[in-house]
Length: 438
Image (cartoon, rainbow, N blue to C red; front, side, top):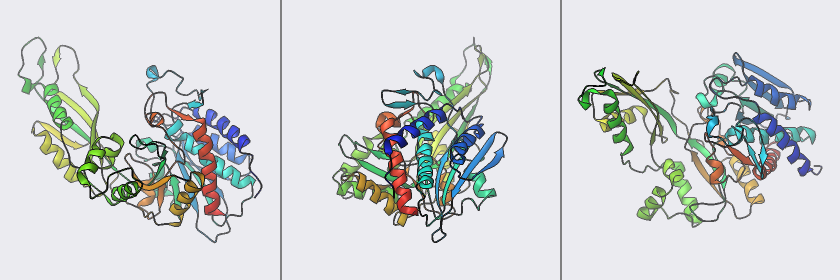
């Protein structure tokens, strides 16, 4: 294989990344067609055939393919083109500017997940330019609507174009590397093989409306009832739950001296409780994300609502969780129900004893000798769940070393990805593709 001029590749990737970030694909409303066409134009310029699949007006799925010799089944590189909305008044840089400052590339979607989309794009471009002798088709897939449960993206694709997702393996978001684990300088890479289940709930309190100038019993004020219910949920102490994925996670990190062992349960529980990211992997979580009450300053609200973002561990029942929340709220005048139509199927785990997992692991170890590689669990939701439900080993992994500050950009303000991470991700993604496909 000819030598790769990585500085030139890095410069090209940075240019594409900046232009991609300038495309506003906030969801809602979406309008990801422009992003699909932009990525497709880069691929088509290299002679790579692209298909654009419309799922709604101004919303398209991009599918590009490099043909292999058919001796092995396809590998899919998948990413989403939509981003969550921006509260621009809290940003110190333009949210859709794609600006580079002090080695950081700023913009909504930098880490979630346009940066990874560019890493995958460059891997496909390099495979084409180097004329890699592919043993399997290499499929690049960019989908809309991931941030709104994938109804018009991957979920739609699986239901209406199963031919596109007829692949052996898939790589998407969900895991990454870190250069610090619980205050210890150690590079740990988590490859997600499962994820938590989205279970949004709506709490509704009904009271008696009236004039705000008169005394009213607190029990008749729907806002007060709702506030008490929300407070009870916020103070709820819930147990730790171990799944097969998190058990393996603990065992490998314990072997590396980074966590107490399963036999040292008290010390292990204490370590988990000290870390918010760790705790999310071992507990059903809930957070109040939306509140609505009242129609006027001088009117006692007759109805108040709250939306609670719950994420359940694999194997947990939504119906059982709903019953637990109702019991915890403990107020018959506050109803608790599912917020909206959610995926009917629970997340399905995939094995980590596969050819693809071993290739990812080997690439990491060859690049970073002392790296610790562990199977992990995504605490949010990803499009991987739709492929896992079809029996496809879909792994969540961005091959970068993401700092805690970069992680804070997920759905946060001043989101950025470092240029170093973009460069590393391009190199490792290509190497993973080269070993898997040629």
